[in-house]
Every structure is written in C-alpha cells, then in structure tokens.
Amino acid sequence: MAGALQVIKEVGLRVPEDIALVGFSNELFSRLTEPMLTSVDQHCELMGRSATRLLLQIMEEQGQHFAPRHIVLQPDLLVRTSSLRHEPVAQANGQKDDSRNNGFLAK
Image (tube, rainbow, N blue to C red):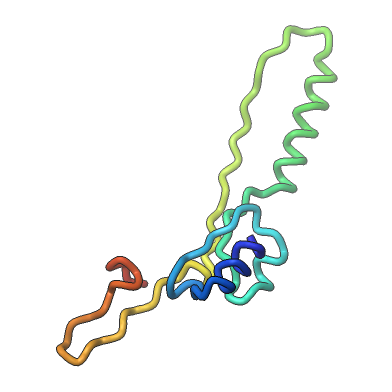
C-alpha cells in the first residue's frame, strides 16, 4: 500500500483530499506513512494460532472420521487519516463545493 501512496503522490493527487486509500493487513508501516493508512486488520497472529490449534486437533483425531470445521475471525477496520474526508470549502455564494469528494462529507 505504501507503493500506491507513492504513485498517487507522483501523479499529483492528494490523500485523502483527492482520493481515499485503504490497506489490508494493518502492517506496522500503515501507522508510519503520511498520511497514516486506514487498514483492515485481519488478525494474522490469531489466524495462525487458530490454524495451529485446528491442525493439532486433527492430528489427535487421526483414527476418527474427519469432519470439516469452520473458524470465522472478524476483521477490524482501523480508520486513519488516509480515508478521512474533509468538509468542503464554503464558496462566496454560500454554496459548498463538494465536487472533490462526490458530495460525501466527514462526520
């Protein structure tokens, strides 16, 4: 995602003013970029522990009938400055210019 941020800046766009940017996996660098990168945290460590636990259970039940198991881990959306929309600038006629953010405003 840091590569995408670099390319966006190279073409003259600004994050988040012109384009929002969201990453996936919540790597350490996502908190070190400017702006800090919004990310989906998929809880990799918990995923690894769950997979290991499941593998050990399957190995213990070696002689028994295998029954598929499903583990669902809920990801978290960590909103940081790379995806925050800013309020549009008020124009002289009192109208708000929301063309840069397609009418969506930060709350």
